Image (cartoon, rainbow, N blue to C red; front, side):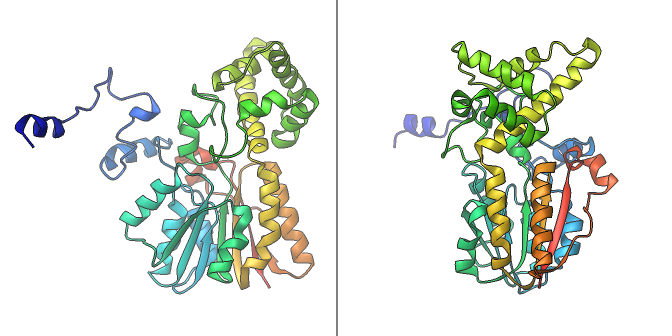
Length: 353
């Protein structure tokens, strides 16, 4: 290799400089994407009640650990691995004895989480990670055997919400995708092309309790009938807000933002068949738990919580579970102040007979 080739190979690429004091777009937030390297910046963002870009702050960690009562030598499952925050705390409780299985459907975040946990010393001898929908927990048990504990956090992770390329948030311009696994199924854009107004209205009501479902569904279908392809988050946001022009001006902005949030949630639930997947997971839970095995589930809206509550009560009446949570467990006021995304969290638990 001559000097010229060597010089070209070792050429250093300078980090992009930004106007102001901090990059504004998700992809350019280099400090938050490297929490180990820029711990002070990350801590400062968290102290202000925000979640750093590209990260996820785990919710109800103390409440989960208090209930699961994990001891070294046990076998457990994190059914929704996400950023790996809950898995990390459970692994600490195991003290390098036993085994934790972890699954997630997201092919983008899963390898990042695997790498993050491996760097912390949790390799295949203690941790097995698979890309798998949590409706298929029975496939995990074929390898693991009966489980002593299971955790399922049903929320969409902050990394998914914050990344505009995933299309989960109406606040950022991006493709209207909304798939937890963008390699499979139909995107939100494709789903809207085929849905009727009646179906869309029902979707908004059932999946998000949207009070303006009739007006919003009518506006969306009207645009599609005109030949509009709703392919970006901003397009859908504008359609929803325009549909609510009849709301008094002093209340319109707040109402429109809430309707955008609910509408995106409703379409995301439909695109990913989240209720169907949760129902299948709940039906299989008793078969994967060992006698005395414990399960904790975090939900974030009423539809999910109703499914969990009904399932736990039914199996309790049938004697499958010997004990279930008498009431919802919520995160502390202190946690909600630190992490605003914790405020809607509901935790329920059950113990197998």
